[in-house]
Image (cartoon, one colour):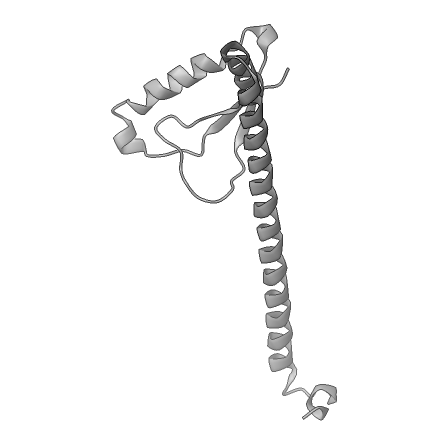
Length: 136
């Protein structure tokens, strides 16, 4: 049996060997991609948990005015219009808002909530969305 792997490749055996090697390489790469995606998902979940706990601890110590200020500065907003499409972790477009330019995340929230009630939403469906955050 062990002699099978050390035999010379004859002209009538090159196709099965090629197919076998291609399948083995494909399975190996597929496995590595799966491992990487699981690691990325775990990292993302840990970052979200850390962010949520830092916001929660800041809310416990802060007054109502300070809480609003903390949320404005640190909490991004995902605007999706008619609704956000579910699914895995996707690459979402991010846009920066700047206090110095007079950008207001509350205006974006209001426009997004208004867009959800539009009659066209029954036809259009969901979108990936845009994440707005303050960058200054």
